[in-house]
Length: 255
Length: 99
Image (cartoon, rainbow over all chains, first blue to last red):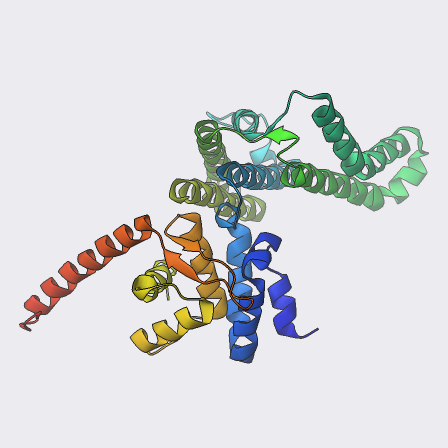
């Protein structure tokens, strides 16, 4: 498979279905000069799922909700990782706002953006089945890790500490990805996308939560003795992710 | 080239009638001397379609021509009039007759 074909396949499926043959013909004609442009457009399309070819406005709203949830879960994951070993960012550090407040605010945003299951038996069972299939692996990994920590000999625990830590983070990462995939891939015949007003309000609240979280992180960079790299890295990532909420709101207003 | 420039150029290319992707790029090359990258072109087409400014016609030999919608014509006219005002003011400032 040529690099051109690989770069074309990086684009989202709805985009490829809509423009694929023409895009491929133009890309082949342009040759290697088009490679950087194709890579940039693939990244651009994945960052703007609202503009993908869609059959209806509700499909766009569903994609916006899935994107907002994915960004929120990523923010949570980064915040979790940053607060684990950094006392300045700990959940309940004494300050006007702390990470626990941001989580509560973002939870409100998540509740507003989540598609709701349709009130039918088929919809509920489909949702439960998809959730079970998607979350089985991280659940087994998580329960296995817990059981090992509870019942293992202290010597074995000490030896396997790195493995246990890696397993913990892998469970969190896998669970985060799978939750995002459930919402992103569930059919609109099973769930009702949020209304435009609820979606915009929810994303707005998420943006405020993300901005607060990045502010808390960045304000902790020089708060202790010397430069806190963890706070700086976390704050920078959270700021970039917060900008994605704003980009989503902009795309929704244009479409 | 910024995303909005690419979208404006595509709208301009479609002002004369429906075209498919390759022909749009040929028209843009005639206008500016440079073609859009394939990713930029179809990204602009995707965005314009999402905004309701262009619409697809029936498939013709594996290509699907697009054309301006009524809203697209209106937006293009507003954009071009705005650009014309800016160009005229700038040229007058340089002491050049805008006509």
